Amino acid sequence: MEADPSGRRFQCCRFPLPKRWRRCVRSAAVHAVSMANVVFAITRSHAENHFNARVRLHAENDRLRCEIALLREELRIKDHRMEQIPPQRRPHYPPTERLAVLELRAARGWSLAQTARRLLVTPLTVATWNRRLDEEGPHALVQVREPVNRFPDFVGYLVRRLRVLLPSMGTRRNARVLARAGLHLGATTVRRMLHPPDRQRPSAERVPPFRAVTSKRPDHVWHADLTTVPTSLGFWVSWMPLAFPQRWPFCWWVAVAVDHFSRRVAGVAVFKGPPTAAAVMKFLDRTLKKKGSTPRHLITDQGVQFLAAEFRAWCRRRGIAQRFGAIGKYGSLAVIERFIRTMKTECTRRLHVVPYRPAAIRRELALYVDWYNAERPHSRLAGRTPDEIYFGKFPISWRPRFEPRTRWPRRSPCAMPHALVRGRPGTVVELDVAYRAGRRHLPIISLKRAA
Image (cartoon, rainbow, N blue to C red):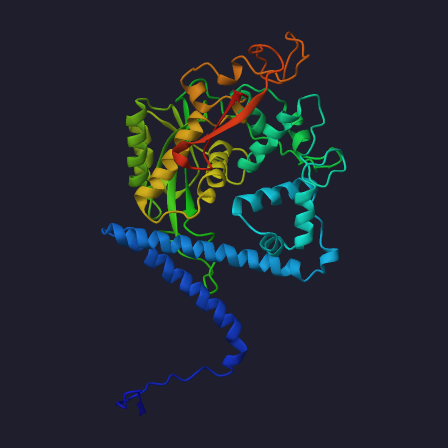
């Protein structure tokens, strides 16, 4: 019997600890954190789908606060490792990163001491950078990386600024986006502006492609597939079977249909768990009704949904010839798999948190699909967008271009695709970036003449 502070006596239940429990304290702590992650995921997922708007808002704010706390802990761990190195032996910031540090300091309003503490330098170092900010010459302490071709300096700045705003875009895609905006640069030119000339980048070994699927027109060949989108950073837990169950609230199941000829996304659907063959058929029926046309061929993997007898009967009733990708054969499902990888890289992994509410995740995917079809240039389509191919539109990148080089002959060819010069050579332009529905990962790039 024990007594509480008020003097009342009560029966206390004691649970015996396992033998040698002190040897398992660290693994028990990891298990406890992993179990807490499961509990929080289930609790927040139900709260974000509550009928009360205040409960939904509180759950979303709580999740964002937790995400911020985890990011701060991640930065603390990285900073702690760097702090173990003596200040004199720490790697130096390159001149271009020093400018980025000063820009960040201005944006955050940090003092010298705050900047030094957060970026692991001394206040005197930051003060020196700030004092010598306007120095010129190749040995300036703070500088913008100089271009190595005949384009004016502002062109290199535009390319580098585009990389800062959209770091996930590669050099070829940067070149295509700028070409659509009216500035034609080759991929090698963009690469030279982004990387020092002496930087050797290993060339990836090309894998021989699989036999190409012949598609003669839009809606001739479609691809369909299923994928999972985790609501956190992964499925791992510290106990058997070492993974969350692959269903809501731990992940969403997403069905995708893509037109092979134009690479246009025909439709996307979201499910809480692995969809049945009937659910996939309903998704494709909605997509066919929306498109108003039926493909001649449908290429899928050999998942249970696509191997089901009712799904094969559904294809026969609609006159669709079902084809399967070869198991373990590179390239047989490359079109749909490449889009899924792109969707995760550019959309779901760029969200601060993947929503728990079905309406919210559907909206995010719908915004991305609209942007992907209308704004994103595709390498397989020579820099054109899926909508331009599907609807037969005149490509924006074929319109007259800006020519920033003053003495460049008007009749001389430019980087692909070739286009006429808009106005006189020597035009000074500036970057104008808008975002679809305010999403930073869905940029709409354009150029305008500088004032």
